[in-house]
Structures are given as structure tokens and as C-alpha cells.
Image 1 (cartoon, rainbow, N blue to C red):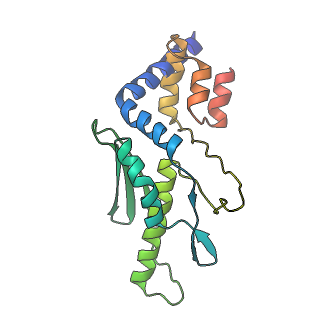
Image 2: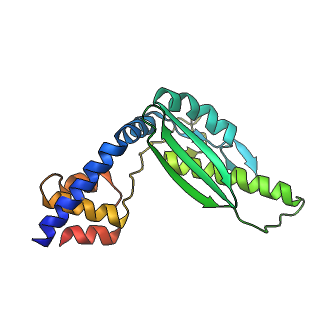
Image 3: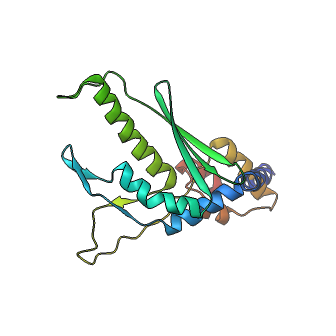
Length: 191
């Protein structure tokens, strides 16, 4: 009986989440299917990477096409990256701490801070959008396939999804297909 209620609760939460964020998630999924691999073309600090201007050049037209936008604001010692759906105002946000007191040879404290902010913006945005960066393989004829990343569920949302499954409003297979579940969450589904 408990499992049934848990499944129903889980389904309800997933449906509520879908209803409240459906425009954002639908547009993000469409964006992720269309965005190409972004090639690493900038050399620095002993490695290659895709710099912010290159990332913006690739993503901005596709974000606009799918009705998405983003902001990256500095708030104290954090960078807050917010992805939003333009028409519905649905949004998701992530925050990352800016390391303090870092010393890099040949840079003053402001240059170090600027470097850290640029680095964190690049990786926070890439993570939120599910971007893939790789070496340029066009010349060798190699193809790099982009697999969209699944979203994760907090334990609270997972519990609501379990309840919804218990009510028959959602299936375990749908849950596993849509979300990247933790080992503990997968084990709960096996019970």
C-alpha cells in the first residue's frame, strides 16, 4: 500500500513539475537536440577550451529560436546562472561559488578574479544547457554524437513521483527514461 501511494505521489509531482515548467523543458530539450558540439579552439594554460565568445556565437541564435534566454549575475561571492523561457517566464537557476584568495603567477588580484569569473561562467552555462565541447574533428571526418543530459530529481520531487506512480498516473519506465536517478532512487524503485 505504501509503495502504491509513493508511486502515485511521484507521478503527481512529475506531472505538476511538467505543468509548471513544461514550456522551459520542452524548449530546452529542442535546443539540446539541435545545438552542435562546440569545438575547442582557444589555447591557454596548457589546454584547449571553447571560449565564451565562441559559445555565445553558437548558442545565441538557437536560444532565440527556441524562446530561451539566460543571465549570469554576480551576487557576492557567487555566480548565479538563470535559464528562462521568454514567453512563460519559467526559469531554473544554479549558483556556483567564486574561489577567493587565489594567487596566479603574473596576475594581479583583479586579473585572477576576472579569470575565475570567466571560467565559472563558461562551465556553469555549459552545464546548464548540456553543451558538449570537443576537439575539432571535421578535418579527420570523425563524427561526435551529442547525447542530451537527463535532469536529476531532488529527493522531495522523487518522493512525489513515487506517489504518482502508485496512483497509476505515471510509470516507472517513464521516470527512468526522463531522469538521471541516483543509485538510492533506483534501489527504491526496485522494492
